[in-house]
Length: 122
Image (cartoon, rainbow, N blue to C red; front, side):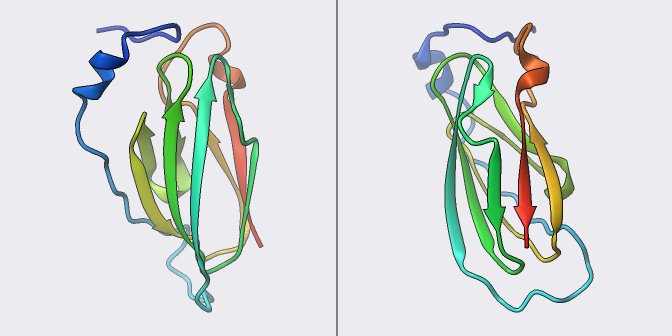
């Protein structure tokens, strides 16, 4: 089965699996002094995310949700073991300062490689 960016029938997406929750951390090393909960929704369309940079603090718990406004996309944050599809939410804690890349996890067409961003943890 091939997936591509473009218009789709939203009814087809409604039958997809229920939202996934991922628990992950950037590192096993300590230092997280306890942060706040950040609820972040990233909107994806052909061929960009509405957020190119997400700033967080060490210890924050993140509830990251993906909403596709155009096309079929996914959102992957490899360092936090997160890979979500439209309408899904992943929950994870950032426990180490650094810059972590995220990208579209669905091969969505000619602009796929432009669908990237960064999570900056201070």
